[in-house]
Length: 136
Image (cartoon, rainbow, N blue to C red; front, top):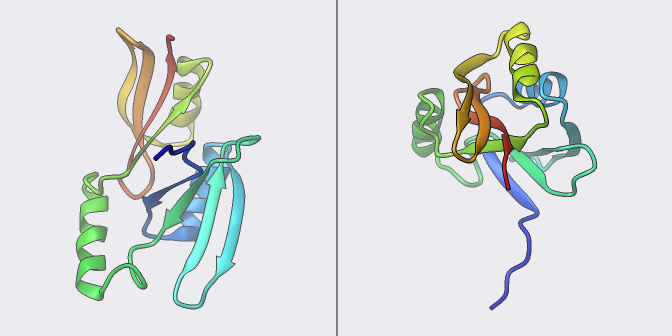
């Protein structure tokens, strides 16, 4: 078996409109698909010019029964939802300054690491995100 590149990843969000405002309005991603399937909304974003998309997935049907959806929501708000995203940036310090000015929750300021310089932050729901300039 030979797999090719990943085209779609997902991250749990508690409010898709708020997520869209954050990922597009604050982080500068672009909106991809926005489809109402009745039981769920398929909402994606992507880095401009990239074909890979991130599904902003709301816990619930059809993937989760009500009890499981509640448990997933609880884990997400604690930063333990299992999802995280890492973005490549040219200037970590400039991105940090922009995120601080936007009121984003910073979990790790820009730090020099053996692999490059990066930082940590969270989306409005508690998901862990990273932005870095990775050597390589």
